[in-house]
Image (cartoon, rainbow over the protein chains, first blue to last red):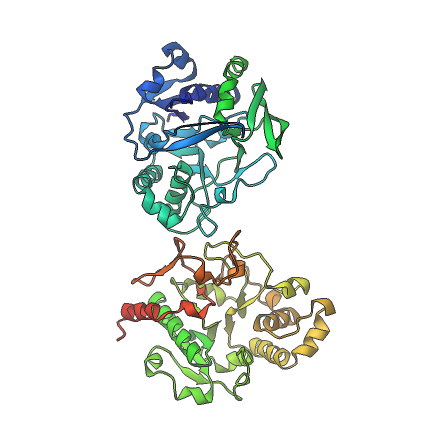
Length: 289
Length: 285
């Protein structure tokens, strides 16, 4: 029975997702028990980096076919409220991860999810076929915005595709197939589920797929949460500041037009400000070496 | 041992709602558990729509006169339910409810007790309603959180005693409220749930029955204020959410398929179109 982490990263003109995947891999290697790590990417993104560099961080590299993008997913990448760039958000290949993952048990994590403890070691061999969280919280333990709790005030709960554990099994295959189907019929599902924005967002697609698999009800039994049931999140108004050691990081958290310097130790953090992670690329990789 | 549902339906509008409730029971419950009898006033009995009569199990005249004849809220006859119901075991319902799935399994657990009220009622998303915004009286006076819109009881001596107490509270509610409720939390009007809750508290009804099966009996309570919405207004829920009752008589609200007894509260919900779909499903012309 093979098991491992899968990172999905396809570069755009401003963000080197493969580099982010290397950083996420380095965090996982430093803080979790020994495990395989796989990068799923496309040729163009892979070719930006040396083969030897990639081999340091990934046991397996899977090159996906070029994704026929259904959306012009232009997203604003913020680095605090002061800096922003618009670039294409190439997130549509995520539904194919079920078939592309080389592992029987996969822990799929976003490239901006920085693992600083070993709590996710507990997922392997889980009795549930899929584990996914439906809570994301800020450092103040607040919920994210209202539409990050439910797709709309009257609607279904939001699940976070930031971290997903799944086994190769019929349930997981159905979940990922449904995500693909929902993506193909995005306008219809947007009209039915009334979620905001125009971006294709995997969190919404997974939330809807889970709702469908729960038989259009809100069951808490079928899709269980990960060992830590919330995604601790640093938004892109905040900023990755520094790494002190393999499990200690500091962030500038936006706070009423100023910043609050905050250090975390032993906490996994979803740092949405990707640009600030990349700014610290050298020090992070050096520290985690 | 006979089992069935019972509701009091006063006035043409409530006859119609009770008819819809009866149709929904026929659609969702096995035949032996799908009977609904209704209590009506003497003067109404002869004037009930004949189509409705085919669906009701029995139409029973409210004994000792209609005590709510001159009242806006028609709950003064509730204590007579045990005297009216034709069944050995009854689930007393509010008329503005429909059933959305087979709950017949509940009977065998309910029958382990003399009587059981629904307590942990749900939103349409199956969230347990915890807000006491409409039930401050219950919280402030430490009343059991009972909902008489779904009340199982056996026809037994202890339940006749219980309903006798309910009758006494209905008839002397000001005295009881003065006796049992602190002045600053004392309701200035009577309501069915408060009366049943107070009777339960006085008689230790919950403790006597010791019903320990979690999760039911329950129902979806569509009072707008209870729906755990963050930003919604207090406009009637039917104006705020999308709902759909399909030809197969499946009710969906904002993509949530309803499976519990559904207390819709807003009478306008029960359109002629929904009733027609129910009639079509049952082959009623």
